Amino acid sequence: MKKIAIIGAGPAGIYTTILLKSHQGEVHLFEQNNDIGEKLKTTGGGRMNITNKVFSDQEFSSSSTNLYKKIFKNPHIKNRFEIFEKLGIEFEYEKNRAILASQDAVAEVARLRRKIQAQPNALLHCGEKITDIIPQNNQFQLHTNKENDQFFDAVVITTGGMFRLFDLNSAEECYQLSIQLGHHITPLSPSLCPLIFQDKDLRTLSGITFEGILKDEVNNVFIQNDILITHFGLSGPAVLDFSACYKSPQITLAFTTIKEHDFITRFNTARSGKQGLRKFLKQFVPERVAAFCIAKSDIQQQFIADMPKKKLQKLCQTLFHYPIPPPQPNSYPASWTTKGGIKLEDINTATLESKIVPHLFFAGEVLDINGLCGGYNISFAAISAQIVADAVLKETKKCRSF
Ligand SMILES: Cc1cc2nc3c(=O)[nH]c(=O)nc-3n(C[C@H](O)[C@H](O)[C@H](O)COP(=O)(O)OP(=O)(O)OC[C@H]3O[C@@H](n4cnc5c(N)ncnc54)[C@H](O)[C@@H]3O)c2cc1C
Image 1 (cartoon, rainbow, N blue to C red):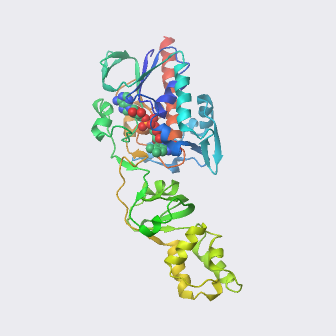
Image 2 (cartoon, rainbow, N blue to C red; image 1 turned 45 degrees about the horizontal axis):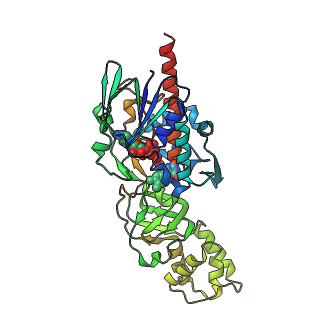
Image 3 (cartoon, rainbow, N blue to C red; image 1 turned 60 degrees about the horizontal axis):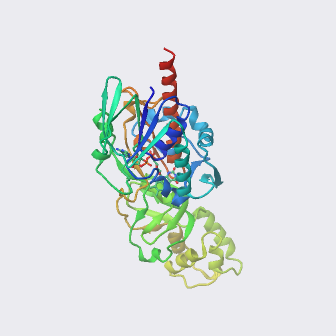
């Protein structure tokens, strides 16, 4: 395998290209946009979450449960920091999340572009969309929109999901290269989305971030993490993860992470003193949220000692079970990732090579492996890129030794 084509310059395609630096042949990276990593530039609000201290198959999902768990036995999952080192990615921790050290995703994409341009075996083709892949005589003929047909010995598909910054096509079109080559696509849906709804009162808290809990109590779904109140509803890590797993529209929000019964115990202990309610609440929620909860619970009393039991119940209702109006369904332009993709039954989980077309590989979000929010998807792009690079290098070595 001398000449390799990589289709799609998101993180999966970029990282595969760089990890194939030692390949003794040409590595061509094709991107339909005029620049590489357009989606990557927007990640983490420009700060890019690279990976997470908490990292196991629990933070991922797939329609093929057993097969994706097999991929999580690959040593590269544990050794992912070695991959980041090879890619030159520098990060620092914020809680469990590893954030890009420069906190500048655009500059990071520029760094990766320079790295590829300086790589002797790499050729970058921006603004070149692959429209067709035709396998023939142990090779692949690639058609492009520039009518610049070329032949390759191996192809890596890293075309990502349905999200398109400039061009949101149909599922059939987005996945057509893989479908034409006989692969199956599992059901697709937008994932990791903000919750969009109308709540004029909550909107007055727009811009506030706090650690809280989103709950779908009907289905026992509880997600605790940072939450951001926006002018359109809610966003932030807890909200994006929640969007991937809630089922009932009866959603409630806890503005704090303290347990309700612990809060009541501390409240009742404080009754004996002369503590003001607002000051007391500030131990658990931001000041503006404290004022909001007091107003929403119709509480006029200033001091804890003066509060009737019924008012405490109402306060707990607001603090721990604030009802969120049924949100708009998840939508692609707002989503961070696409749930679903290439069916894992169609690929060899050890190499990510197609079982249907030899020397055709897949990496990144195009596969039916979906990570939660917090660095899981970029990590998977890097890990899958490394698995594919290993397989290509091994195969090339095997061919040369004959
Ligand atoms: C706002 C936002 C914030 C995010 N933040 C984070 C984060 O902080 N951490 C994290 O882990 N994940 C984050 N994600 C998710 C992460 O960006 C994606 O999971 C990741 O980009 C997927 O990488 P990929 O290379 O598989 O696909 P993509 O990044 O989607 O790249 C695929 C590329 O293929 C190109 N392409 C497609 N078809 C063709 C074709 N036929 N010919 C040529 N080119 C083609 C596309 O133009 C695209 O550039 C975020 C996503 C969004 C939208």
